[in-house]
Image 1 (cartoon, rainbow, N blue to C red):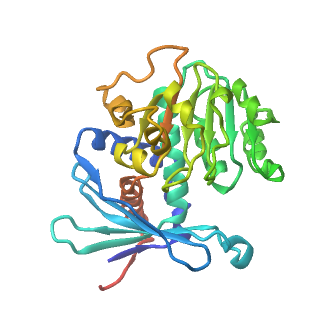
Image 2 (image 1 turned 180 degrees about the vertical axis):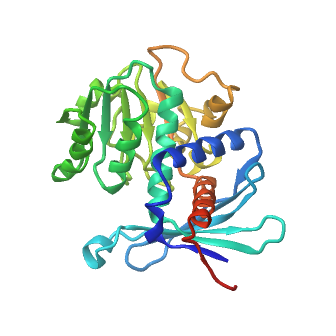
Image 3 (image 1 turned 120 degrees about the vertical axis):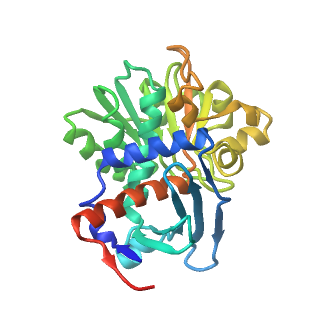
Length: 321
């Protein structure tokens, strides 16, 4: 078995490589060459933690495995560790034998950012100029860096429930040579692209906060009950997602479905747009919404890429198992 420790990931996985891996696996999912297993996600009754498993099989890329991990909300304050902790395990699809164990923390951040970035590439207006961020935590910095590579943005605006955290994303904007402005949630109406990356169970973004022609990527809802945007916004939008089954059960669509505002058939796979079997955005005034629930296949794709690079660079640790 090969081990690729967390400490090696930063030197192995780039944003471009993560983007290519995620875009490819979304396309494979839509072509039915890859599928995800049902998600297990539970409150463990200790440290307010959520723990679970995401897995799947990519027949096109021959990647089989799972990611184990979750969210420990007190890690940063108690242990000086990031709150999200995870590890990816890869198995040989021909024999079932374990192939690799890969540190999953940075990979999760990169693949999550890559997912919203893929949605911007395929769904945002080509002339998008103002980038809006709702959320300014650790993951928001990865989201913003990746997003800014997809269009010629001229300005970044941001909102966070705790405004003292906004310098996290202001720094990224300035690194890209762009001005940054803190705005109220109503100010998101100025944005051409919005990424929401929060962990709230009550919507922050209302339908009237989003203007016609906007593309919004909702990246924080991955559990039953979570909600970042008002359900009626999905009724105003053309809705895309990574995995329809997850979107309607643990993603943003769960609420719009429950209220009868949309049907399951109104939720489309982003991979179909990548493959050209769905036309994606059809007008400059259309609101497009990407519900990024996070799928196990994303983790397997980036982990498999990392293992290959680690072997080439001689940093993978081989152990008998």
